[in-house]
Image 1 (cartoon, rainbow, N blue to C red):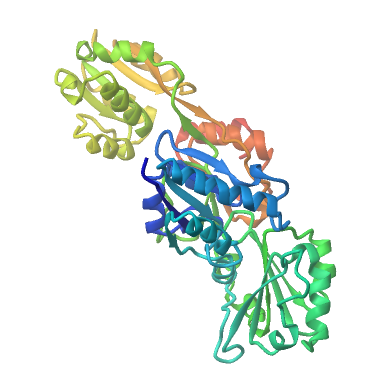
Image 2 (cartoon, one colour; image 1 turned 60 degrees about the vertical axis):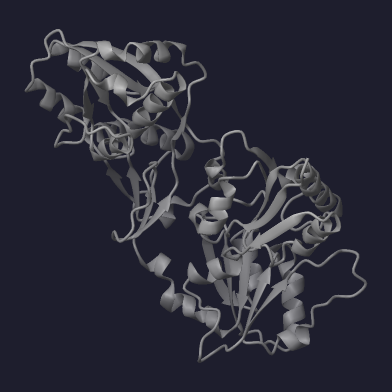
Length: 467
């Protein structure tokens, strides 16, 4: 068996769309993905079906920056093993592979075994912390240089390679992996003649919805960090540029919207969207009933799609059982709205009916204009969709068959959030409302609630998230 190839890919600092286009394209082809535990798991949703996903912290003790040589050796051995099996392997690293990520150790292991590799750069945490806090790392007035420093060196080193005296003369100092021993690091910097009034900023969870920024000086940042319970992962920026956060923190100054649906992020809209889907779409475990209906789909007069996911799973199952869109030649097709319509167009289907009002009520209003007496309607749906739609179709004379095409579930491991950080929370469906209520209980008084659709609005009122 010929050897496989290994890509060391920078996954970015946290936000899943900060991976590079090249990194994402390679990810989609990989057989094996060995990833850092700090990598946002939503990136892995782009992996191909059947790809083997291996989280690095499960290969040994600890997380963050514990310096575990045992775990690193296991990672090295695993990269070699999978490549020798002829697999297409990605080592997906948080941030950029070349910055404080033990890249040389992994490359050394691959090189020793003559395994082909490539390194794909990524957005490093320092860059993300800078851009998303409004703190430029260099500035003509304050800093013409910038250095990156690790707060964690190899535990078996006989002496430190960090020359704090020299670093103190640099314009901006950026510290990685330092929160755990911040007190010790600050003492070192002060000893190296950086004054107590030197500006400092700590950016925790850069680029994620849980991002926090704490500013201060070398003289007070340690007690401030303790009081605010700052935790890793965090980047610490030392230098005059840190004071620019007050002036340029666009994220804090602008409208911040927590978007709870699955739709793509909206660009060039007012405000900044933080995408935290409160629903997850999964396939059914058993499609026997659904496939039986598809085999006889030509018997129906109408197929009504109420979401783009219904479209996706409908055509995926149609293909699985050996058919294609020609099976629909006798049926008319309806879409609840433009998102669903556009997904149908991807499969070469131009819907016969799309209501002006994109909702169940709008759909029924349009169908009331037609003669549905005795007409057969097939309604692919989720496992928790509104059962009232079937009843309304039957009230206007239709014979309705519904079948579950996919599951709508609550995502696991939703993060803790400071909801007061957001200006607005946008709910896109009743299930996003229910899952928010289950996980976060209530909306802070000063945070606005916006709902898409009347059904979602009613659910928000029922759950007392909105008056």
